[in-house]
Structures are given as structure tokens and as C-alpha cells.
Amino acid sequence: MNTMPSQESMPGKRLPKWLKITLAVFAVLFVLGAIFGRSPDDPQPVAAPVTTSATPTTTTSPSPAVVNERVTAVTDGHTVVLASGKKVRAAGIRAPIGTGCFHDEAAAWAIGQLIGQAITVQLLGVTDQAGIALASLTTANGADYAATALQAGYAKYIVDGASAAVGSSLQTAERIASTGALGLWGSPCKGNIDSPAPAPSPTAAASVPKATTKAAEPEPATEAPPARETEAPAGYYPNCAAARAAGVAPLHRGDPGYSRKLDADGDGVACERK
Image 1 (cartoon, rainbow, N blue to C red):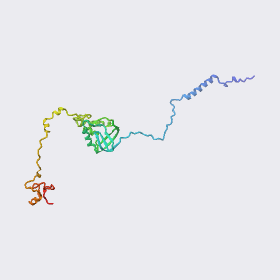
Image 2 (image 1 turned 30 degrees about the horizontal axis):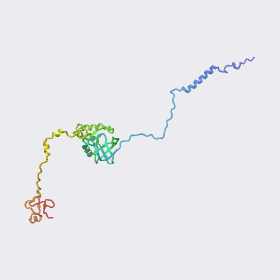
Image 3 (image 1 turned 90 degrees about the vertical axis):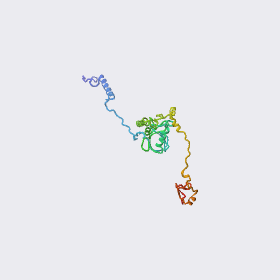
Image 4 (image 1 turned 45 degrees about the vertical axis):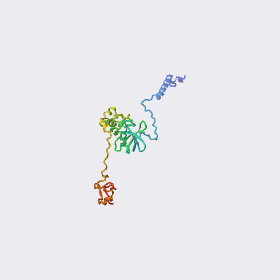
């Protein structure tokens, strides 16, 4: 009798179905864990920075141009023409223009300060509404032109976008002139430079004393006395020959018989021998 167990009844030769399913599930979970189970604390790969051989460039704002030039013309109290032909305007100020009150006085003062002078011009990279370049002007003696004009009462302070850094000092200079009623801050302008100077009122004209009006009337002309030395004094001699014949030559100014007619060179000695 064969006592050997059959192949189907031998243990371990064939896995149970439930074990196969369990192993398959674990295998799937292992694969999923390998793919999605990375810890957020794990270091992530970082792409290497891309480097180029080009040298990095830096952008810098251009510094204001500074030139030393001679002033050849003055348009008004705040605008000048340089020897190069360039027209520039002093930043931060506005002087009377055209028929504005105090225009002639401000222009005459600017001519005396700038014309023919070598000044330092710092272009500020800004233009006014007329396209004229705004600049900081320094006179030959080292003074700031805008501040000097404001303090003397020949211009008014304005905010033009180019003078913000020195606005407080310019306002202080203007305050000195306005407080002291200097220049355009005095009569008749009183700070108004956009209109012509007001005409004197009829009341002021009527208050002029009559004596002043009468003094202006021309006085009767009086005949000037003839020059003394042209008169022929006593002992007049018609010519030097007569004076020599009389033995009085030479004649000096003040001597009897001296005449300017006989003093040909006007040196005060007549009929002298040469």
C-alpha cells in the first residue's frame, strides 16, 4: 500500500488564496509608499544656478552738468544767454518780464551782476514751459544768484521742481526783502509783478504844493557877462609888433595891455619871442 501523500495534499506547495491577496495588497502599498510617501522634510533637489559670462551692469543717474561760461546777454532778471549761445534760466526765481512792474529795474540789476562775467552754471536736467534749461547760477564772487536776487527784492520765489533741495534758503532770502519792502515789494509794485506799475492817483497829484509847480516855471534869461580876458584893457595894443614897439612885450595875463588875441598859444604869456 502506497503511503506517500499526494501532491495536492502536501503542505507548502501551494499558497492559500487569501495569502496571495494579502501579499498583493502589501506589494501595491509598498509601491505607492515609495512614490507618494516621501517626507516633506526630505531635501528637495535644487536646480543649479545658470551662470553667464556677461558682466552685470549698474544703472546710475547722470550727475548735473557743470560749466563755466561768460554771460553775453540778459533777457530778464532770471534768464541769461551764455557765450556758447545756450539760454538758461535761474532755478527757483521769477523776475518781472515784459511790462510787469519793476521789470526795468530788475533787468538793469541783472545786467550789472552778470553781463560779461564768467559764472558757474549747473544744469539741473529740467526745462521750464518754454523749453529753457533750468540751472543753478553762481556768480564770479561765489554768491548764489537766485538767493541774491531774492534778498535784494529783484525776483520772487517759485517752486519749479528743480530747486526743492534749496527751497527753504530761497524762501528765507525772499522773506528778508518782503519784510523790508525792498525792490518789487515796495511801492508802487507791492509784490505784484504781473501788471504794469500803477499810475499815481489823482488825489496824490492834486496834493502837490503849488510852490513846487511854480518853481518849475522857466526864469527870465539873463545875459551872461562877457569873459574878462577877452576884453581889451587899458593900453590896448592891436598886435604884438605894437606891444614890442612900446617896449612892454612880453605881456602876461593881468598886465595892462594883455589880450587873449595876442596870446596865440593861450599859455597866459602874449607876444613872447619864440
